[in-house]
Image (cartoon, rainbow, N blue to C red; front, side, top):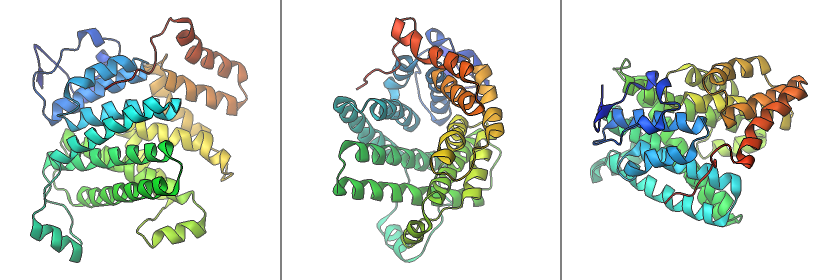
Length: 335
């Protein structure tokens, strides 16, 4: 058990007690990989309980020194910027992401000049990465995707499109290398490995699913620069990630929910699998019954089922309490 300040925190799998107990969470006196994952799990629970400002306060003390705190802190601000489209929010999130990338970079493996040159000639598998370096690669790749998203939102021009595309390609290559590490890693029983595996499943699954939705003509062009997308493989990876005990399991769930309830209908690629969507959402409905994100998807499924009264009640639960002041403001600007 990792000791934090004057108290202690339990494992990631035993985080239920932190869902509504922010006032009892002590400030960490030291930060290692295990503790950082545990604290980010607490922050994620706070977010799912609509306590965004409390989550930011929990992450803020360590976000410049811990890769997971940096990733969590920037993720909340990017979510805010993407939803408000306010220039100040976008600028704040962009500044935070740049710092988060620097934080993650400090934990990544540093190649020597010889290694860097040889990697241009011989494709190497980073099977000798240390535990901390493995997680740094995943966190760095996720932060790159966030920056690419904000780059597209910030300026809608060709230069921004190219910059964002380069960041996406770099992130994709990192995920592919991490998948190679996953395949050759010997110790697959530790909690740290399960967390790393969850990150790889989420990244590889999301990329494959996203790319598979593109028209075949565009996908064939992207294959020339190293992209490839297999829908069945992507869905399988996301399902494995959703079934895991990883901190990123909920992100795999939300990706699958978005695919089943929106993407398939918008693109006309078939009907979404509502049975699977309901099964994925059910445990989170029990754990976070008032969570805005969870209620939103519950309402969406209800609409697709034709249960408009249930959808209306869920959406009222999402929006009205915030408007009446009964629920704390969902988003706040951090620095």
